[in-house]
Length: 599
Image (tube, one colour):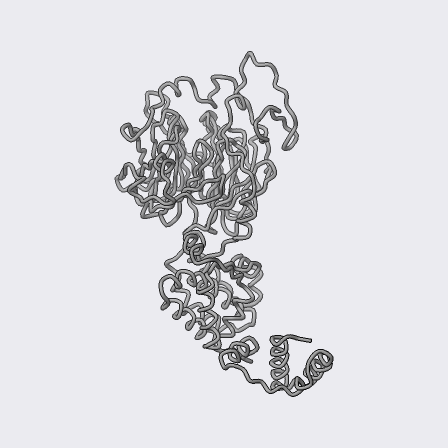
């Protein structure tokens, strides 16, 4: 025997079927429930509260044509914008993804004129936020056949958007949808959103990390948080061979190479060098290294390139400051050697030619005898500073390669590009050893972890990922950021990741716990370079706003606050003479080296 609620629902459904003329369905329902419902069920007079009737009818009400999607979206947007601030912050997560899903649904139903009207009228509301690139990409989707070819549309259609709201805010939303009969909006929310209820205090406390209006895979974020991170730096015995040492016991790993069996944690095969190798810090470097502090700031040196005519794209400085390499838009590479008398001279007197496209990244090896370059032509080249020519061409990327970097111990290097992939290479093989796939947009920058077991990649999808080189899997997801990622750097102790964003913000992340430590307003332009001093006291950031900022990392370590203001961390600012900053580098002796081009 059904309870009162079941009987009520039976009556309501039967009345709906009769009103719509579905006689066969109504008869089938009567026959199926004949033994379970009272006799008066077959002719149900319904007497219910008007609010309950309206709410239930809303779930069953379907407009046959739904021609007012633009007006419906306008209603929900203006209502959310006019709510109290506490509710507006929570439901504000809904406005942008709802616009995207409604637009894609209109395209899927081949209602092209209405879809363009929706985007043209409401997309400008979000141009000042971090989704401008997504909106420009969506504008290219004008026919149903284009949905499968557009990466942004596929990203949204294949994933349900998670939003975190309090029960009070969600009830207000439901009441508004019911009152105004916004069935198209409700159907879109049910189909494409995953609403998670949280206590009011939890929503407010997590607002900063969950308020990004763009796409972010929260489920994957929670899964990756469970992975263990071996963050500790390498010991000297891991990469230095003492002459008196006996041959260490080893075992095979990663492509058949060998690695010491007495390591604290598994690692990729790491090359070993004898004491005194140019790859390693010398005793003179350690003795002459300046001990930094608030009272003893690092000395700084700025290299300015003049008359580049906005043609220079990248520059790198060797760890001892003796060599500078720059890549240009005309596909040429130039490098300067300053080992003789401290005066830098253009080696060879002419540029190095090899690529057939713009040079986007260069990276000097720790010894300074080799460097890598990546280009618009999709290739990476290894060059010799002594021979003044290229030695190897690495082909694997199908599109422009945005960034390349040597590992701290050379031999390995990593690259990333427009194909949304990262790649691990060795200098003695022309094919990649690992592919790192997981980003939803261009991978803009890539950086080595100090222990050579991990790399970090930053993307224009407003996320960073930490990759384990041993198996090629993603082990951490950092984000959502407020803008595209332009630069990355690890602290030398391996525990923290500093992220520079396109909107000038800087974020600090704890890679062990996978949480953001702090976020601050760093610059007034994209942050193109970051580096940390050898003792982890300071880090330097350079930007297109022609400033170099020096920040105190120790204040961050000693503070119990979750967020610190800009003034609490900023130690000193250096303004260049109208030169955008392309590279910041702390030398082995803690000298701050900076390079940029005069605008």
